[in-house]
Image 1 (cartoon, rainbow, N blue to C red):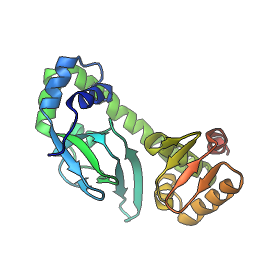
Image 2 (cartoon, rainbow, N blue to C red):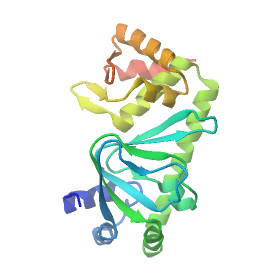
Image 3 (tube, rainbow, N blue to C red):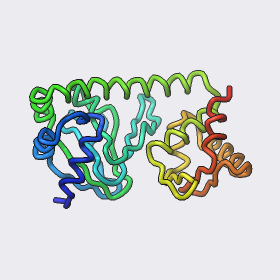
Image 4 (cartoon, one colour):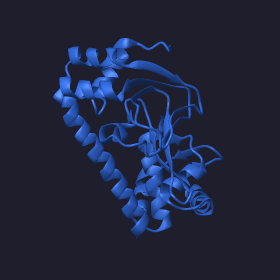
Length: 232
C-alpha cells in the first residue's frame, strides 16, 4: 500500500468538492473508510462501460478521463488533479462508468466502494448536498463544451481547450503555465483535428502567446488566449 501523510490527505479531503464543510472528526471517518490505491503511468482506475464499483479522490499525481463515442472517436473529457473526485457521476447515478480513467503520472488515490459511499452519505447529509452540486457542475461543464463545439470556430475552441487545461493540468513556472499534454489531447478536447491544432499552436507560438513543443506547451499570455477563446 502506498504511504500517504494522513494529516495532509485529510486536509485535502476537506478542500475537495465532495467533502467540503465536514468537520475534522467527520473527515477522519471518511478517510478511515477509504483504501489507498497507487497507480503507475498508464494504469487504469476504471474503464468505460464497467459497473460503478468505486469512487476515487486523487491525492497525488494526475489522471486523464477519456471517452470513446459511438462512432469510435476518442474524446478527452478532463485531466484530474489532487483533490478531484473521479467516477462520481456513475457512482451517484448508479450507471456504468461513462469514460475511462487512466493515470498519466505516478499517482495515488483514495478509493471507496460504492456501497460505502452510500452509507457515508446517509451518515453525513452534507456529502449528499455536495454530491448534488458536484454532479450538477460536471453536467454544466459538458453542456458548455457541447455549445462550444456547436457554435464556436475552431481557433476559439482550441484556445478555450488550452485555458481549460491550464486550470486542470497546468504547472506554474515563473510567469508561464506549463502543460505536459499532447496535440491529440487538445484536439479531442476542442472537437477538432491534429492539423487545426498544430496550425493554431504554430501561429500563436510566432505571436508569443505560447511556446509549443512536441509534448509540452508553455502558455505565456493567458489574457490574449482568453480573447482568442471569445472571438467569433
